[in-house]
Length: 382
Image (tube, rainbow, N blue to C red; front, side, top):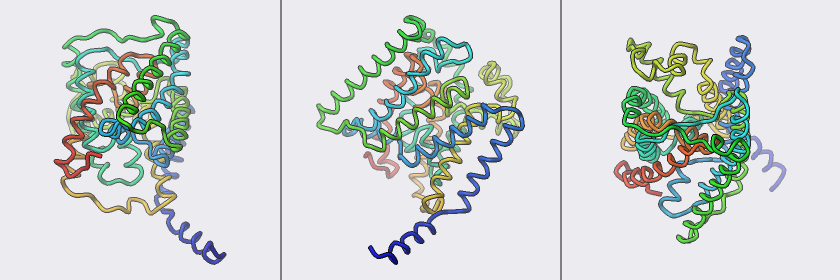
């Protein structure tokens, strides 16, 4: 290639940067950090920065739990699923012992019962219709996807309905959380958690081999998984608990409903200490919201730095309908199932909590049903 061609190529690449949205993403992040620092919350600033980094990595690595699980269910391709386990291993190395040894930190734990199973199953259906999970919806919206903006809107609405439904489903019964460190101590709990991950990875590889499918994660998934795992550890230290995506959606929806005149304060969920505080306090005091805001802006910055922002055409109406239905199902399922792929599965397993594995086992059949429903909305099963 000639020098002139290289120069022309460089000018073309420079033109593709969307300076307006890049500036908006960086400016919004700077303002958000300034606001929490003025309120003397340096840990909150770290949460925003951690989320910003997560948005960049997820977008650039195209790290999709939804697509990875779909490839595993339809073809037996385990490469993406195993790439996701890299994140869990890195998180578990820190979360299990630190949460067990320090009262300042806690893991992602949840009871075992019908609420968990039903919520995870419904979430699995929704994520395949929406074509994105909790984190996937967030970073693709940040990346400029109008379709996923619809999914996010209905995700938020579904989360509020889920918060109103959760107490009734918990009344169906269940057993208290099962945490490895409670039975084996901090380091024994870590060993058991890592052994469980290795056992599941072996089973996944065996299934892939039996179906003649790939099980070696791509370079981008390995690098992305390591980066996401390290950023999740940073978020854990800054927030005092593992990264949670969907609780913020519930808070946003509840605040919007309250602004519209709906009184949620008498609902059992919103009388529990954590949700009650989140509904009353500023959204800037909610750790999940701060990380989610950062992720949105990070994905926006990464997208705007490489191409015109939100330049793709809107999809057909049936696809938008699937996004809306999928978002509703994910929101409702996330509250009943104590989170999404990140909060329930990644956070749960990385905390040594049995509910994380049960969530996965319940979500995968939901994914299968969602995949079978996709052609009804003009979506490919692949």
